[in-house]
Every structure is written in structure tokens, then in C-alpha cells.
Amino acid sequence: MNNIHPTAIIDKTVVLGDNNTIGPYAIVTGNTIIGNGNTIGPHTAIGVPATDTKQVDYGYDNPYLEIGDNNIIREFCVVEQPCYEALSKIGNNVFLMQGVHLSHDNILKDQVVITNQCVVGGIAKILDGADLGMGCTINQYSVIGHYSIVATGAPCMKNVKPFSRYIPNKPISVNMYALKKYGFMDYVDEITAYVLKDAIPTAERIKAIVDEFDGWVEKYGRETY
Image 1: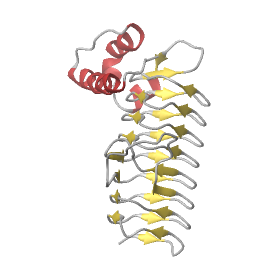
Image 2: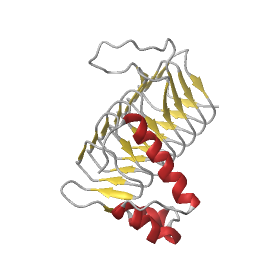
Image 3: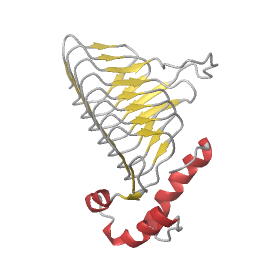
């Protein structure tokens, strides 16, 4: 059973799981699949067409947006459909605060936090546990690594390494808060060497994270801070 406000508009193409709450004047449209236990706030726009200035051959007759379980999408957020790739996706336990704009072809992995008024450009990937500070902007094709943080108000034009802190005009540093929060303190020396000196990790848990990040970076070819 879902709790849908009578003023919300849910298109017939939308597939809803159970125990979702959808607030007043929310719009959910397109080929959108939503899992269970999500909260979608007032005046949100989910699954709306991509905003892109190029005259592209979209290549997909049926682009899909998937939203997993137990996410919070607060009021006035926008989540677009893809137009260059087959799928846009929000994972599980993601928190989008007020006024977040997610452009086309974004993928957000689990436990991502995007704070108020952030804008994520098209085809960007925000990986597990990443945190975007208030009002920051993520450029197209950028990859924000696992358990990293982008500073409040930062214009982020490149990739951000896993476990790192990106603060404009300051050296990259280790996001110790995330290491403590997500249980990585046993790997602090190895993570520090990776973040600060590009040392290749050997622990399987850390190596798997770095390999996933590197795979996205290789696909899109942007530089990394």
C-alpha cells in the first residue's frame, strides 16, 4: 500500500512498489520504476524528459529511470530521464535534500547524500557513500568516488577520488569522517596512501572500490583531482 497525496500526478507508465509516500503536487512520469519505502516530497518532478541543448539521436525508444528502496527525495527536487544511455538510476538509502537537480543519465549508488540546491550535470556518476555539500555543482561526465565529499558551493569540474575531500584551492585530503562512519578505519594507512600518493591498494575491499571508480573514469575520460 502506498500513501499518495490526492494532488500528486502519477503517470500510468510508472511502476510503484510498496510503502512509498508521495507528497502534494509531486509529478512522477515516464518509464519510471520505484521500489519500496521511498519518500518523495511535495513539488518534486521525477522521470521528466532530459534537458539537453544538443540535437541528439537519443538511441533509446524507452529510456528508464530506476529508483531503489528507502530513499528520501525532498521537496522541489528534479530527477530526469536518460537520453544518451539506457538507464538513469538512484540506488538505495539515498538522501536528496531540498532543491536538488539530477540531470539526464545520472547514476547514484547506495547511501549517497546530496544536500540542498546541488546541481548534478548530465552523465555524472555519484558512487556509494559520496556526499555533495550544499550548493555544489558537478560537471557533466564527472565521477564522484565512493565515500568522498565535495565542499559546499564547489564547482566540481573533474573526477573526485574515493575516500577524498575536494575543496577548491586546497590540496586533496582524506575524508576521515566517512572512514569512521562506514567502517574503513582498519584501512586508513592504505587509503591515505591511495588518496595522497596514488598508491595502488592491495586490500580486496579497497581495491574493488578503486577498480569500480577507475572503470567509470576510463569510460568517460575526464581528469581526476
